Image (cartoon, rainbow, N blue to C red; front, side, top):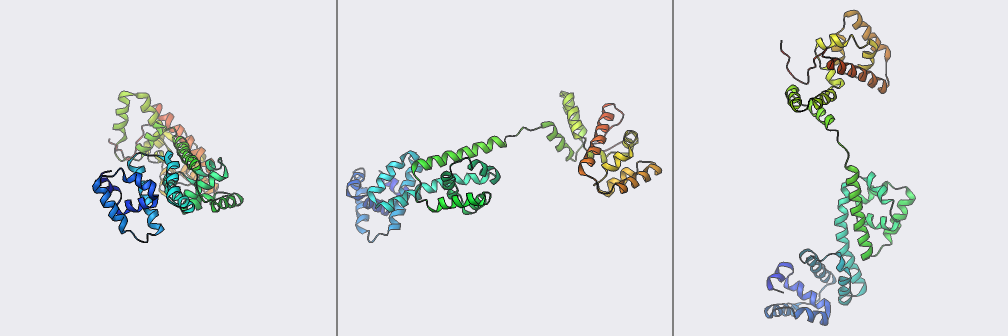
Length: 336
């Protein structure tokens, strides 16, 4: 061990405390690996230590094993070795508490990844596990997160889990590995469930409907390479909001293909300005008929409104395909 390594990872005092805690036999084995100058420094530090508190010893040991895991590439498989060292260095209860603290912190860090998974997704996955494993994993969560999870259990199940948590003293190495595997399975299951197919045409149409610049330029660009795709996007762009934005010449044609009753249902729930605009596209007699029909309908089921709007959208698409109307997209300018 080089002097720089001692300074980098642990103070000389911490190393001295660790060697004293391990006892003469293990301490001597460690000291044999030191250089002369290091032996002198550690020996002086050992001779100056007095009335060491248990918490100081715990801190030195925990820091030592943490450094090993972080810098020497030693993973969870070394827990048996760590437990054996601690049993020789400390009394049984102290060793048990420290090993739980050292490895429990690892599990808590790993369990924090579960905060990204919606509770309503995580709980059904946990319910597939044995209640003991559920309790152990929930005990590794932040209290607020654990509380939310337990709130989604029925009262009896939550009580059983809380009882298991309250009677848990130590997490064994096999349990720790099981919990790590469970966390990874939960994450992978959530990722798989979240990978939903994307309808690129609908997404593109939705984006276009929120763009302020001319849509024609983009659609013409698409049409140069794929006319069928352009047509699909144009059809998806056409929604009821777009229909309401059209100029009077479009409605002059459209109104001949859509009944007054259909318009009356479709205009339920629209803004007053849009409603008045559509009514204004009809001759006075029909406009008055449309107004009275809207008023007479009163509150209307949402499904009936949506069916009427779909009928109008379908009519607009057909008229466009037949070149009977030319639609204006968004804020696109119209020129004489």
